[in-house]
Image (cartoon, rainbow, N blue to C red; front, side, top):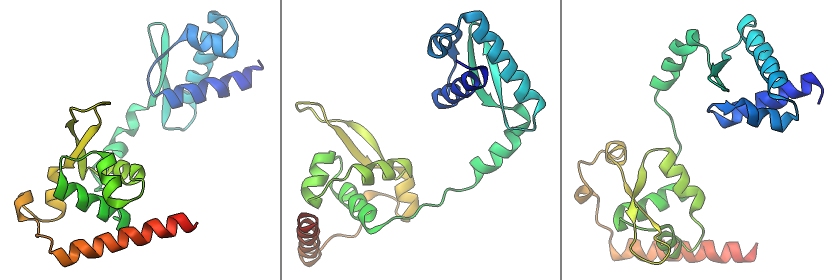
Length: 189
């Protein structure tokens, strides 16, 4: 493999892995011996050190890891302290409502109520910190159970789940109608 291509391959592996990778594993990927692979990695490390960039390679015993340069930490702290803004779409709000009122609840139970797949919605709500895994159901396959978080309570200005408004029978019927309409739209498509 040409040296520049080997560098690109090594860079992509180290970036994607996010943790240290042994030199012998890297050598096998680029089909070089350990000595040549280590030379290439050290060239890359030197290149990162001389260029104005935010990353570097760290050598750890017989492995290498891509990491942020120390002088970049103050900027990372600034971005980490910036509150994340997230948008709750109708789908996310509906899924969140189901979880809030029915928790602990599995994905399958959410899907039965909504009538459509909820994988994306659940993943986004976990990412936003509004729901979390609270355990596993004692059933075949031991499906994950989801519940709301303290961040959910803060975001919606309630002290506990008991403060959530009660749903009237009219609202429940409206939700059922909306779910049935979503099902008919997805079947038509």
